[in-house]
Each structure stands twice: as C-alpha cells, then as structure tokens.
Image (cartoon, rainbow, N blue to C red; front, side, top):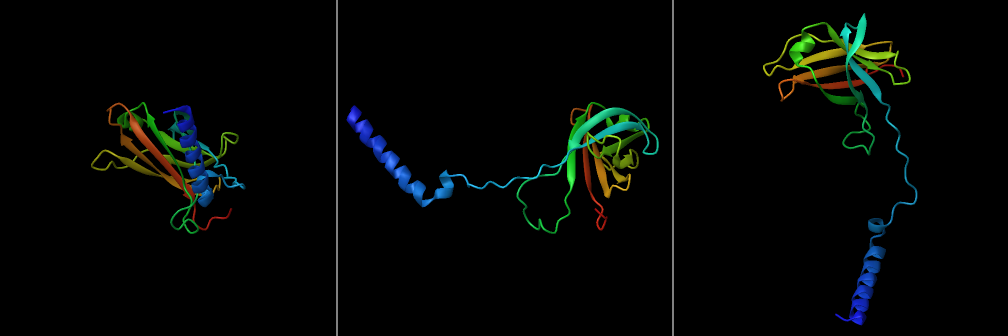
Length: 172
C-alpha cells in the first residue's frame, strides 16, 4: 500500500470510531463524577495459644478480615454484611488441636488490644476432618462469627477461613 492509501484507511478508521463513540458515549468516556467507594476496615486475626479468657502468644497470624467493597447485588439493602479472611497456615490441624489454641479477631491494627470475637479451637471433626467453631462476641463489639479449619491438601498445612458479622439487632 502506498502512503496515501494508508492515510485514507487510517482516516476512515478514525471517522468510523468517532461515529461509534458518539453513539455509545459510556463505552469510551469515564463518568465525570466518580463515586467514592468506602474503605473497608481490616481486622487482624490470629491463632493464639491458650483460650479466650487467657490468650497466650500469637502462634500463627491469619490474614486480616475485610468486607467486600463494591456495588451491591441481590438483596444488598436487606442482607447482613459480613467480613472474612482465608489463610493457609503452616501447621497441621492435629498440631493445632494438640494444644490449647483460640482464634481471636481484633478491632483494627490501630486498636489491636480491643478484641471483638474469639473462639477456642476444639470440638468434633466432620467426616472430611474439618472443624467448625463459633466465635463469640468480645468487648460488647456487636460481632460474632465462625471459623472453618480444614486439613490442607499438602498434608502439612491447615486452611483457615474466618467469618464475622454484626449480631442481628445489636446497637451500633
């Protein structure tokens, strides 16, 4: 192709793009007034030695709990918001259950001494070797939750999911 022909093809492509773009402005232009998304708080969580009354040292840190921040779906105006985390910890579930341990959730990194939910690790394993425990409210936080501990596929780790949600009808 000659340079003149390249210029005509390029010009036609630009013109076609301009026509399509003007017919569908949202496809090529960003909304001029972006909506600020709220920042979800992060809540540190740990497996501690001991129990919820007498927490010992942190044995394993867990991923911080967070709430999803995006556009609501389904019955978003009626659903109870929840926060969650997932961590693969480098201990077997047998090792975790072989001594007294508890999962503790903190209000925030800045307020690490304020505990909002805690649960001792123990109970009955299901047929797949999974343990599910409740996390009770601490410090009148208005939050309770559950923790789900499952043997890792590698045989030497444990997958830990932690979920908290406001107590239905709680003040705050």
